[in-house]
Length: 246
Image (cartoon, rainbow, N blue to C red; front, side, top):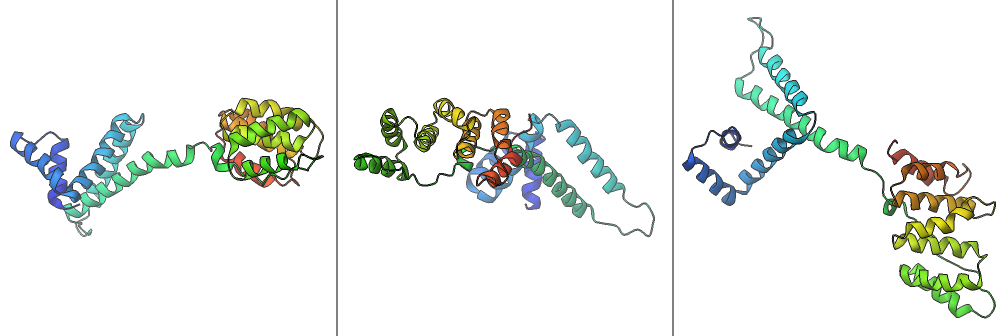
């Protein structure tokens, strides 16, 4: 930021511009992209300080930083730093502190989402009887990402094959992709509580269903039930680390 930019923007936020200067200032914003960018950065800082709960503390800390820097070493032989350089150093430090406080908490506290962890293996149902075309249609719809069609076809399939746990799980996944977490939970819970080979897979997708509902406690409980030697365990550990602390 140039000296001229900095001075004008400072005067603007301190309400030191007269009517003519205010008009010129606003005109420059529309004509000078660099000036407009500098103004927007300062505006974001001002808005941040105006709404964050800890703004007064931050202002006090920045003021204390400025005081200590300006006082410096009072010895006569101490190296003197030009006032302008000190101002730039302080404004830069303050800007860095504000930006860190503004954006870092968002990065650290952003809760994970279903879409970040949804990983689906291709569906391959065991062909039963003469219904090869029906099974192929289900697989084609699911593996092609047409989850609403896959869900409808799986519902029909499960009317005839209610004990097919793999189909139950993939119907749950299709429901999750359509943001129908309640339906998925009702299907997955019995499998997750059972003793079949699909138990851990059901636990994983049950955790994702709870995650979709932002029920982090239930999500954590399901993840913790996945054994260490299971395929989904590594994913479970990654998700556990990102879950908000309740």
